[in-house]
Length: 238
Length: 179
View 1 (cartoon, rainbow over the protein chains, first blue to last red):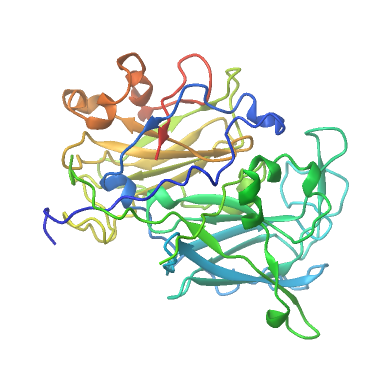
View 2 (tube, helix red, strand yellow):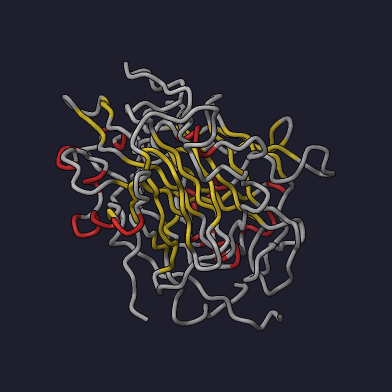
């Protein structure tokens, strides 16, 4: 542990992400920077990051079907996978946060007022930590689709919001997981904002082997965060 | 090892509060910490309207310029949280913290992520402080920014701490970084 030790930055992944200016998604119009981004070479603040989680997770935070006295309405599902970096290395002990609508497509949020009922037994919020192999698992119910006002007769495909920290400020990611074969994909500007060849990475895989007979369906969703550069940064503290 | 393709980003959407709000989110340091201060500001869109469905996250070194992280080989700071998170539903964000120390070779700074409905990917900026103006000329990041935009990265003094508004678009647009 000396100051001579070299820091290693993270590879950029510019081909994976949606452009901030995506006209099909109308809210981006006034919410995207118009000046070019300034390249920020990675230094100590960027290669470190919050390693939070232990102490933040309650025993039932990973099971969204057991957070109330009764069970929520809806199709019970297991959502599981691994959090990896782009070199295939598992990211252990890392906080995973999710939130979602209920089976009818309604969020427990004061801003969501479309006429679909709230479920008294469903908050739609989960947290867990990845294990030593980067694995996570939630039990929840399949969220419903819901309408929004982006364009005429606009509907969001069913999705679960995911928030990941990884091991560094650079790896922070917020995304959405979708379900296979959703007929609403074609008209959704948020899903389609992603470069075409990268879209399939947002869709979970149905996994018959992980279903629980007479209990729950299962979907696998691996999340890949940025990998590390091959060579150390030239100027450790500069 | 074969390289895996990374997972794309998506917006946090308008209902981020149910998933990402923590009671202690704004507290990088607990109430009553000596030297603690508030970093507050608004997040504004291209029409100058306040964005009330944004989330601001901060990441910073401790007052000695250190992090509690295995990659900080310079000297770990066990128990230093370094992280703050605040939504903007009350018209702005508020982070309770202490001024960071200088990471070697750089002026003291806080890395900031902003998420919001309408942002398909976070935007990243940095906060510097007027207290360290004498170190700003030599800071490699500030120096990489056009001189006439550097002041968008420097907080101003306020009654109970500092003010740092984030202008996503338009006049005096904040400098954002490609990290």
